[in-house]
Image 1 (cartoon, rainbow, N blue to C red):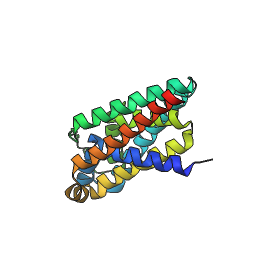
Image 2 (spheres, rainbow, N blue to C red; image 1 turned 90 degrees about the horizontal axis):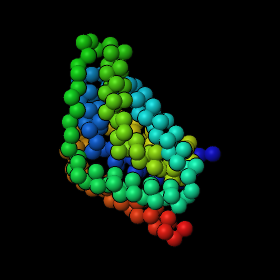
Image 3 (cartoon, rainbow, N blue to C red; image 1 turned 90 degrees about the vertical axis):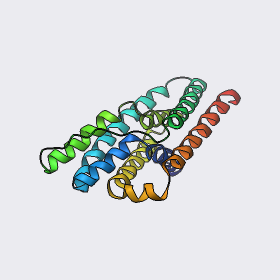
Image 4 (spheres, rainbow, N blue to C red; image 1 turned 120 degrees about the horizontal axis):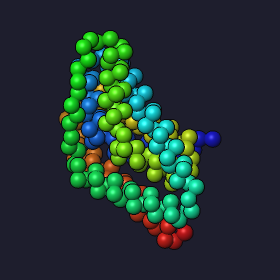
Length: 193
């Protein structure tokens, strides 16, 4: 059974954390060079692989005592917020242009770029943390993959317009504040629970 509240929370946190990420910018660049639907298919497939790995890792964490999981996830959320604030929305991705514009070449380039760039990325670690925190892999996975796909879609199709209207620094600060809140909440529960 999918929990709408967990899915919505995960969607919001992962969406905000991914917006200022370098892979969102890479999607934007790919979308301006190639057919958007081809790019999206490759990027979406890579994000689905990453979410599945993150949820599996987070599910393993649920085997530990609950207090230990809360301390670990709290510290990881706080560390993620620090990394996000330190990066400040910077980053650019080197993108190799496929020889032709065929579906397989473009989707493959998008898939490989995201697969490599997102390995061990902040949102993948956050997804594992959330899977451990809520012990609801389906809801966490659904929220995370929908958030990543939404950011990819925005980046590919409308990234330029979004970045003109909403400063990347503001998006980064909101995501970091949410992560600090989740980290503090996890640590509070570890101490009081």
